[in-house]
Image (cartoon, rainbow, N blue to C red; front, side, top):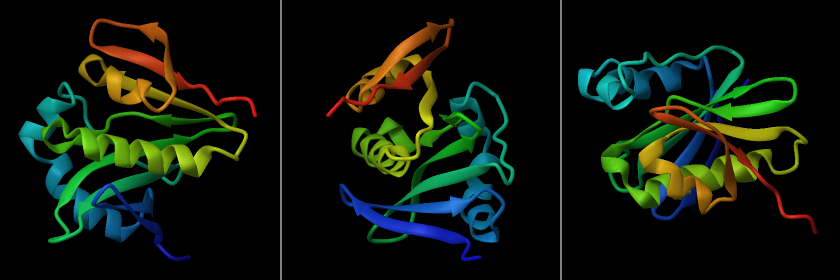
Length: 148
């Protein structure tokens, strides 16, 4: 199986879809998920992955620097974005990653959900996500698809 599942250029970032246990994923993500500042960004919650995850990783197109990532856990009826990271909360990177994930799951019949840090709510809203539950630091949001 090809470990890098797909690659797209969106908003000047290259978004690469990778299998949750691929060596390529580990080599580009490990320095980030083990960085104390990035763990703090994630409210000190550890990042996790398994074979049931696909990761969307945004790279700068000039120097292959990782700008952010969205791990997506694939379940029977849903796909869930959780424990993500975007460098400097860059709007363009958020939107690039959200567009890539949304496009990927648009026709799968799975509900697309996200556990979102409250400051990032507006980025998810622009992609059609709505709040279904609120906690003190997070929002559970679900993607609503327009009926054609």
